[in-house]
Length: 83
Image (cartoon, rainbow, N blue to C red; front, side, top):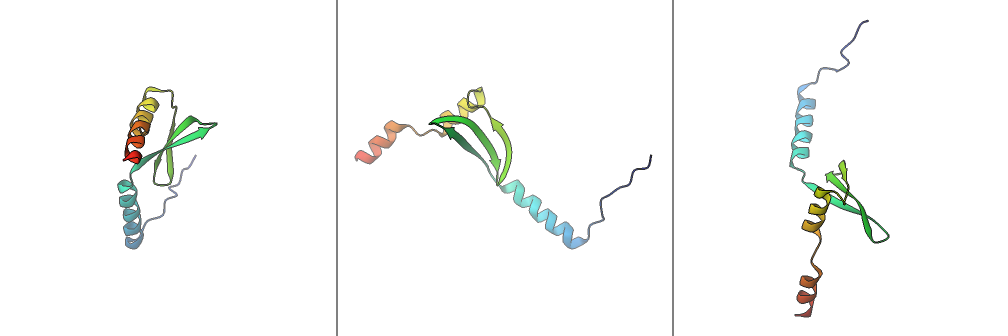
């Protein structure tokens, strides 16, 4: 059986473009998006830019930690708006 290398050699401009894209991808921050259904968080999506990295169960230790960290405290909001 014969295997062939299907990757084409890259020229210098293509290499610069791919390096720029890689540098941009490295600088994009990781964000978390809560998926809600009927008022309940059913999943947490970990995103890097527009790319979905993984889905986190909100009932897991990590999921609870993320929700605790990012859920605003309603008593602070009430105090801020009343002043």
